[in-house]
Length: 218
Image 1 (spheres, one colour):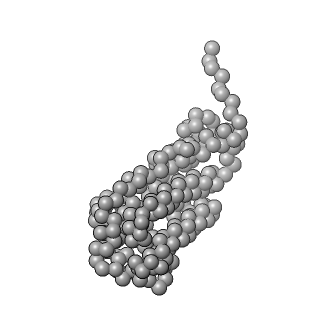
Image 2 (cartoon, one colour):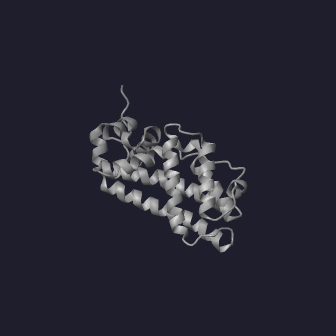
Image 3 (cartoon, helix red, strand yellow):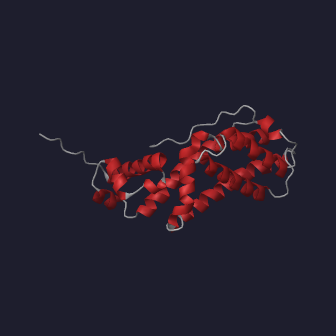
């Protein structure tokens, strides 16, 4: 006799759908998080997914927040493991440009495009970009207070640095320049903004092991 499908609680089903959306996004990007794709990943009818997730826009926004929020937490831990602001900054920037983060880079790039028609996603993107700027600005402020960096406006430099990170990571999606060259260009630019001698950040983070990008599922 055919087996009877296991009944799940509402909370279990919502979590299962969220995990499926995350796995799809990390494999194929946010554009692939559709009602039919999520239903196929879970192994249920699309109508059941629609019952538990009335808004696909909300599911996409939640998926984005979960993935990039986990990445931020990971990079914060990396920064906190370093003894100086210069070491933390160079380690963080090199990690963000690591080729192993391609899945998350694609999610970021697609979020800016999809956010034009998904207001909730656009709001989540702005929130995450603000959180990243606060984090990076905090490292710069720490370095300024310790006399490592010279900068009048850490938040402005943080915003400009993140813009360069985003641009260079977008370039990586089409394999324009290798990771080491992208890191070198970025660190040289940041050294100039912080009035540091050439090679100061490169020396601080000479040996950097970038953590892996967030994996699918929880």
